[in-house]
Amino acid sequence: MNSLEWLEYSAIGELARQFYPWLEVMHILGFSVLFGCITIFDLRMMGYYRRFSIADSVIYLLRLARMSFIVVVGSGLLLFAAQATLLAVNPAFRFKLLLLAIALLNAAIFHWQFSRSRQMKQLIFVKAIATISLLAWTGIVICGRFIAYT
Image (cartoon, rainbow, N blue to C red):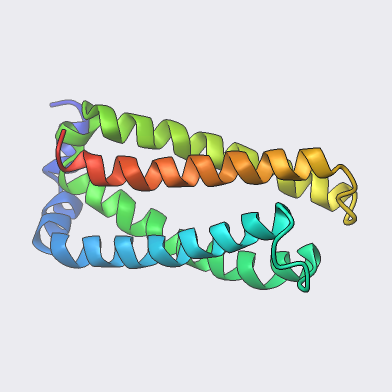
């Protein structure tokens, strides 16, 4: 038995299968909040909603995004445990994880740059980060839906 089979047939995997519909609801609702916060924040970085400073957006939107990210990751790990062997070979799931890695790296680059200079004077950099973010997170949502059909 490999580690994916072990996870799937463990008590956690069994519990996750029993609560699968509720875990999906938590995952989708959490992702809705996360995607909404990220979209509004990225649009602000692209020049929309100028009455809000980027610093204020970081404080308010990203705090909520972080909380919802915890819900998404927690529910996502349990959903994975319920079907680990199937998901591990699912191309949509694999692409979702790749896009997630890109989105998280992109966010880390933004936060690193933001912590160095709160002014974010390099407009092209800011817009590039926001565009990559929007594309990656939109792709994650699309892949999430495709998982059920591939």
